[in-house]
Length: 445
Ligand code: NDP
Ligand code: 2IT
Image (cartoon, rainbow, N blue to C red):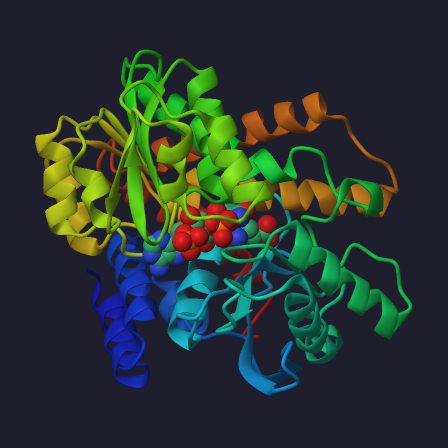
C-alpha cells in the first residue's frame, strides 16, 4: 500500500475503531488503490483520501412508533450522505435488527464507487434502521415508515438525496415512505426509487439487481472462455436479489440447486422451483423451510453457512455481508467453484476474497456485480424527470449494456493498473478515478 493510503487507513482505524465493517470495506479499497495514488501525487496535497473516507454528513435520529398493543417502541434511524461529487446522494435503506453506524458507513463507502461504475450521475449514500420488519403487522410497518420519513423528509429530495430499498425494504415499505413524504411536502417528485409501477416506478427495477448480477457474471465468464449454460449454481438468500438472480441464471441455462434464508437452506438437486420460492417469499412472507412441503424431494438444513459446502461451479452470495468466510470459500473451492458473483454487498470477508483469487476463481466484487439495482434506480430518476416511462425491454436492454460496460471498465482498469483478472482492484480503481477527478475539480469541499 502507498504511504499516503496507509496513513489514511491508520487514521481511519484509530478514529473508527468500533466500526469493523467500515474498516473492512475501507481496507480493501485503500489497499487496491495504490497504483492510482502513486500515479497522482497531487491527491495527497488535496487531502483527497481523507475527504473520500469521511462522510459529508451523518444523520441519526429517533424513530418512535406505536405497536399493535399500544406500546411505544423506539428505533434508531440513519442516513449517511457520503459523497456528492458526481451527483445527488443515492443508495438504499436497510431495515434489519443488526443495522448500526458501521454497517451503514461500509455500505455508503461501497455505494460511492458502485454508483460511479454505472456511468450515471449519482453520488453515494445509505441509510436504514435497526427496526426488524419480521413478525410485524402491515400496520406496524406503516407506522414505523411514517415516523422514519417524518424526520428523513427534511434531508432528502429528488436533486439532493434519493433513497431506495435494501434488506427489509421492498415495494411495501417504499409505498409507505413515499406516501408520507408526499403528505408532508405536498410534492409529487422522484424522491425514492423502487416505486410502484402506477406511481412513478420503473419497469425492471424489481428484477434489476439479480438480472444485472447475471449479465455481469456472464460477461466475466465469457471473457475467460466460459459460459453460464450447463453450470450448477448455488444462491444464498431468497429475497429480492436472490430471486431474480435465480430467474435470470436459469434463463441463461444454469441450474440453481440451493437457496437460503437467515434460518437455513434448501437443497434441490433437480433444480429449485422458483414459483414455489416466489409464493413463499414474495406473497406469504414465510420461511424457506416450507419449500420441502411443496417439493418433498428437496432437503432443508438448519443454519445458513452450510450452503457453501454444496458443490457448484457458480456461487452467487445474495444475502448479506461476510456470509462467506475463509472456511466457506475453501469449501466452495474444494467443491469446484469456477466463478463467484457477489449479489449482496461485501458478502465475502477479506480472507475469503483472497482465497478465491489465490485459487484462480473468477471473482466479481459486489460494487461491480450488484450495480444493476442502483443503475435502474438512476434510470427511474431519468424517467421521472422526463415524465415518461420506458417499456420493460428498453430498460432491460439499457441494464444489460450498463453491466457489460461495467465489466469492461473493471477488466481494463485491472489490466492497466493492477493484475489482469483482478476485478477487485479493477472495480475500486475504475470507480475511484471518476470520483477523484470530480473531487479535484470542485476544490476542497
Ligand atoms: P431482502 O430483504 O429482499 O432479502 C434478504 C435475504 O437475505 C433474505 O433471504 C434474508 O433472509 C437474507 N438475510 C438477510 N440478512 C441476513 C443475515 N444477517 N444472515 C443470513 N441471511 C440474511 O434483501 P435484498 O435481496 O434486497 O438484499 C440482499 C443483499 O443484496 C444485501 O446485501 C443488499 O445490500 C444487496 N443489494 C440489494 C440491492 C437491491 O436492489 N435490493 C442492490 C444491490 C445490493 P431472512 O428473510 O431470513 O432475513
Ligand atoms: O446496495 C444497493 O445498491 C442498493 N440497495 C440499491 C440502491 C438504489 O438506490 O437503488
